[in-house]
Structures are given as C-alpha cells and as structure tokens.
Length: 266
Image 1 (cartoon, rainbow, N blue to C red):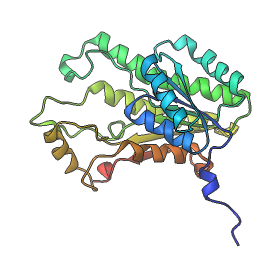
Image 2 (image 1 turned 45 degrees about the horizontal axis):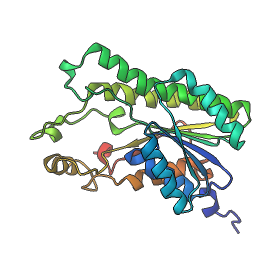
Image 3 (image 1 turned 180 degrees about the horizontal axis):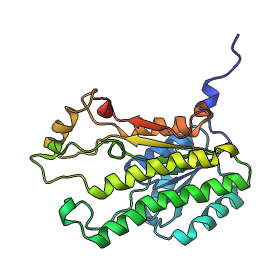
Image 4 (image 1 turned 60 degrees about the vertical axis):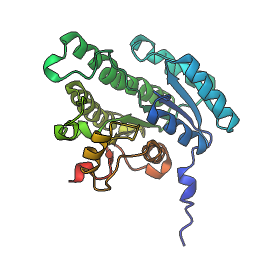
C-alpha cells in the first residue's frame, strides 16, 4: 500500500520563496499561489506604492507576503539581497525570476532597434536572470539548502514568432526578446547541471500568451494558433510555478516546461 501523501508534496510550509517581478501580471499570481501553499513569500519589485498595497491586501487574505523595493538593474546588490533575506528568515528555498525589465523604446521593429537599447535590454533582463540565479544558488549551496530556482522563459525562447498573428495591428515581437528568452533557457540548463550535485534544481517555465485585454484582432489570430483555442490565464501559469517550487517536482531539473495551450506542439 502506498504511504506517500501526494497532496502534501505540493505544500510549501516552513519554506521561504522569493518572486522577483512579483507585482507583474504573472508574478502576482505566482506569489499568491506559493503563499496559499504555505510559503513565506518575498516579493521583489520597484513600485513601492503598488507593492505595499499588494502586501496589505495579502495580509487581509491571511497570506504571508512581504514586499521589498528592489531594482534588478542594481546588479551589485544581488548577493547582499539574498544574504539579507536568509539572515532574516533563516531560509531561502525557492527563487523565481519573473521580472520583465525593458527600456522605454522597447518593442521597435528589429531594423529600428538602437544598439544602446538592445544592449540595455539584454543587460537588465537576460543578465539579471542569470546573475540572480547564481546569487540564489550560491546562497543555497553555502547553507546546504536543496532549493528550487524557476526562470521564466517563453515560447519565443523555443520557437520563432509567427508574425502573421500581428497583421492588422500595430503590434510586433521584439528581436531582443528572442535573444533574452533563448539565453535564459540555455543558462537555466547550465545552472541545473552546475548546481545539481548540491541538490539545487533549476527549471525554465515558458508561458505562451497570457490574456490581458489585448487587441481583438491579435487575440483572434493568436487563438487560432493554439490547440486549446485561447490564451492562458495568469493563474494557469502560476499553477505550474507552484509545481516546480514544490517537492512534487523533486526529480525535475534542467527542464523546459511549456504552458502554452499547445502552441509549440503544432
């Protein structure tokens, strides 16, 4: 008779989780999901007013979520930040990179992207994910924590965009995004290999499009490309993050988990 309590393996009681970019569309849902599973959640983001409001709302819902004002562009602060969290809470079990830093001119067509803009987006997005992964993993290694690191990739780190879905709109998909998300996926596999002997897991979570009241023409075009005929809801992505954070995924590392409604299967 099986004596394993499978539902308990999804619990995060007595764990401390960090969600970088925890005020974003997906980041918020990830933070809530991990907190509902019993984790203390530290939300890192840069909007103080929005962050404190979110923290207060979560406390009313009896969710243990704490906001910390944090700028991913301040790369010299990474090691000190994770060390400070561990010193205060004596745990750092889950680290989620879900931020989406970008320049004001982000979203230009490839031929119009300025070199300085390209470099800044690569630095603030790709490099922050890689270096925060290193900071979190090194802390886990030092403190002998068999933790889980989740880096948000994208379908566009795995396959190229179908630019036909943008026809009839002023939307496009930036070239920097493909370079960033492809790099994140590759580095996450590297981290899984590098830190695996310490029991530290690293996985890429790759959502497809998430519904956020987009242009109706785009929505119609996009939905036709998915097996399920629709975009994701943010909570559906958060559910996958909860799985990767928990012991339910204890033998999964270096994986690329697609949450895309079948987009990359077709």
